[in-house]
Length: 259
Image (cartoon, rainbow, N blue to C red; front, side):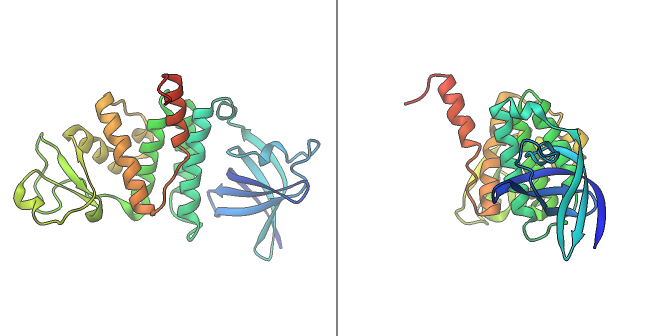
């Protein structure tokens, strides 16, 4: 048995029994850990705030027989703007679902803590949280071994022209406009990407976090990146993530497009 001090982000908080919570905390040293927070649902508990979803805190944990229990904690950032903005909260909830899925079989997967620190902060503060979410998930998937082949043509190896390229999801890569290259792959789920979108993806994949989430895109490139991101996520994870659909429904409602 031992006591551990660590900083961490609450990625998931689930109530169990009458007053307890089960927390998934992403830490720099131990990766994603599951901790019990006894009595945390009680309004009088000192653990109530530090057990809320997406807070950042410093925790003192009791560790025994591969189980963690929160003894005490001090809040560092409660991320209150998330709780006041349904769009931002939905975006970070979506990203949390992806991170939990990735870490299910490898709780200490590299860079996840640093990634979450940058991505959650930008979702909370950036004027376009939806775009940040899609940039973040492309970056995260790339770092976890699912980087697309995007720097040059998958078949001939030549750089892409100003005409852009066609991305073949089954091949995990982009192919130039030459018929000789496209005839080398069978029918597949595809998406056309402009040259600007290709450059955006290259920049995103090859640069550190502090540069990745500060891009400003034209509306056309923004929409191409979002469309690509949605389809690539579904193809890689073999799962339909639906949380962001609520934002589309909300935007349609605000624009009077409800049918």
